[in-house]
Amino acid sequence: MKHVRITSRLVALVVVVLVGAGACAFDPQSGGSGGGGAAPVGAAEQATGASDTPGPDQHGRPTPAAPTPKPSRKPTPKPTRTAAPTTTPSTGTPTVAGCPQGQHQRAVETYLARLGGFGTVSVDGRQSAADCAAIKKFQKRYGIRPVEGRAGPTTLDVAQRLATTDTTRCKAGTGTTFCVDLTRQTVWALRGGKVIMAPTVTRTGMSGYRTPAGTYTVNYRNPKEWSDPYEVWLPYWQHFTQGMGFHETTTYLHEKSIGSHGCVNLLHADAVRMWELGKVGTRVVLIGRRPGT
Image (cartoon, rainbow, N blue to C red):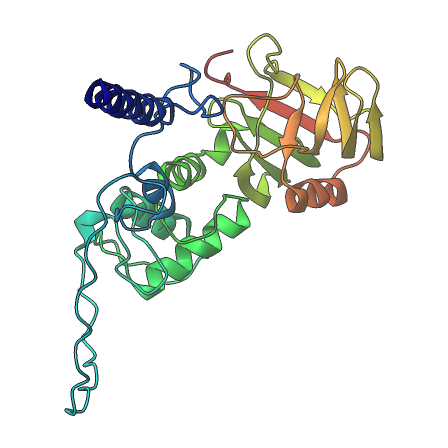
């Protein structure tokens, strides 16, 4: 009888230990859509970059401590320096210190060489220190972020639009004329038929708010106009038709998924320059049509 009682107690102890171990397998406070699911082993290490060595909260048999090795009397050799591996232009990784190469290197080089004014550019499809400096200068001028010298999609798009703008398509008057190519989303200024402000980037009305082509006149100006319907300031405002006008942009100009409500958005430097050139009575010519409107 005594032997039976001892056996029963041992069985009960084993059941308690097993139930306790099973209850610790689920954490009711763990994240995830399941709610109460166990976190995957090594999840914290994957997130932090630590090793996958089991931590103190991971169950398992303790490993016997390895014997402490005796210190060696030999001097520790000094680490040798090895040169960083070079990369090829096709990988898109840095080929010039701090200046990555983009997937549109050759095309951007071609358009920058055609535009001129940004430094020496070698049209060979390979990044160089001079190419990097020229692309950075271009990106800074036209508000492209980040300014890193990489020939990416936005840099290519802006360079192509500017390089292919035909300033002779704008029918200028005898005085100053503001010209807008709605198709290429560029703007420039003429006086007496000569370019006095080279083509620069703009963003006009989005779908549902199309900026109409036509010939207009600046009929009202205000260095800081308040927009009642949209509750935003419009710096260097020059109105020409139906509540539409030139003004400095209040958002990132190269975000193509959005647009204006009909106005001609400008970078700060360009808005200031057009304010200096314009006046009430300045001729405004818009040609083409913005894609998607």
